[in-house]
Amino acid sequence: MRIRSIMLLGALALPFALPFTAAAQPYDNYPVCLRVYGPVRFDECRYVSIEQCRPAAMGIAGQCVTNPWYQPPSAPARRARRG
Image 1 (tube, rainbow, N blue to C red):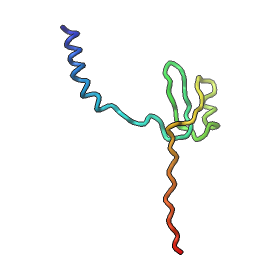
Image 2 (tube, helix red, strand yellow; image 1 turned 30 degrees about the horizontal axis):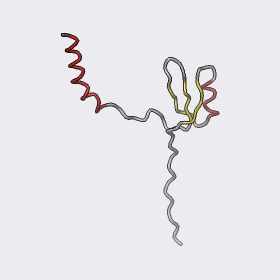
Image 3 (tube, rainbow, N blue to C red; image 1 turned 90 degrees about the vertical axis):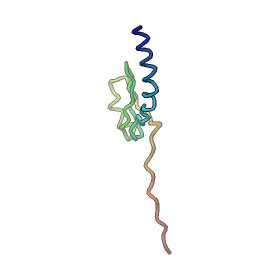
Image 4 (cartoon, rainbow, N blue to C red; image 1 turned 90 degrees about the horizontal axis):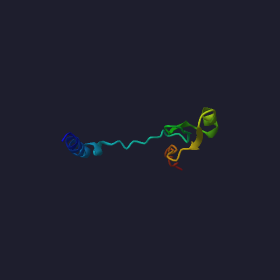
């Protein structure tokens, strides 16, 4: 009886939990990430070049990779010259 109640409660709570899941971008907007391998794999995207990332990757199970989600800043709109 107790297991059935827990399952029912979980089934009733599921529709309320799904609409509130986060869809945030997990990566910062930098062109290079340090990908760390281990029991938990994660990307640390805060480098502007591979050369800047390499010292952080030395001595750990990790590698520097380009950030596939990087979006360079847009150029400011240019004003038309009168003349």
